[in-house]
Length: 363
Image (cartoon, rainbow, N blue to C red; front, side, top):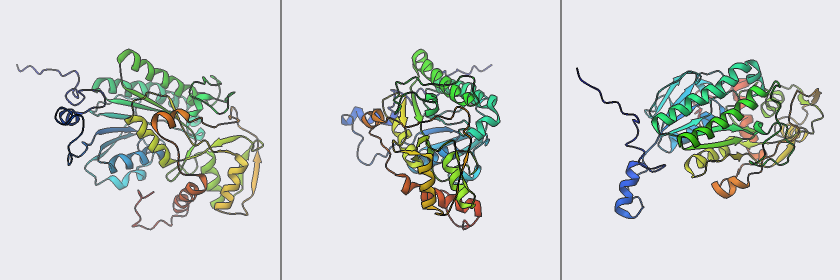
């Protein structure tokens, strides 16, 4: 009988030192830490959970563009195959339809863990599934990272601050969250995911990164996901009134998706665990946002007030001093420049006037 030797860490030969791969080490031995001219950066093998979603698909575009091999794991609960279809012929791209609540074994260098419904419409639709994704799904991905020696990045959320009593929110603020409310499957789920990530970091010496994402918008957002930017844009395009909840004085900050992707990649490649706030500190009331949407799409769009929803945060604005100082990151695209790009994508999808030869990935 032939004995097969078990290799406890199948990637051990590739992960000699944290963040330094085999070819880099060889280069360091010969040229004092500099990679010789002409030696191209070795592409990493990257797993993106939730990679067919809004943010995930834009991240996949960037990773493939720089030469990495990407595996997308997505159960398509809120993600759409169309978001990544333009990579179908790329030999460095692979998509697996799989729910992260079930374990999976893959050999990768980096894991970007984005899988989770992120809008109230979706996470309230199946709250138990949402918290299972946040807790069991995150446990599974951390277990995979530990098994194969991969670096792990958790996309957490500004919702960990709840309805904040501190403004703007800094990463050291512990938040004001209702643990038994209709949003807590998401808010407390993400807080627990952060806890698990830090516990693996401390007890298993796992390389981890934590990003707290603030409101993000752009092409490929779900059209009817209940988030304020997609709501307003879809309503204005359909000639419906813009629905403002409460008095419209609650504030949010809006970052364009390419700014967020840049921040996530800088965080993953950097040396700092976080958590880091990734958001645009420009603050808008809901009424101000409605005005920007009117100016962009339809100046005659009407505004309709409705009663506010439970546990809706009154103010939301990131303090991004840490990201600026330690990651060298800050958002560059203001709302008046990013919004028209999203409007064009929504117009194409709502009215179906996308030309057949248009490249879906050129957003």
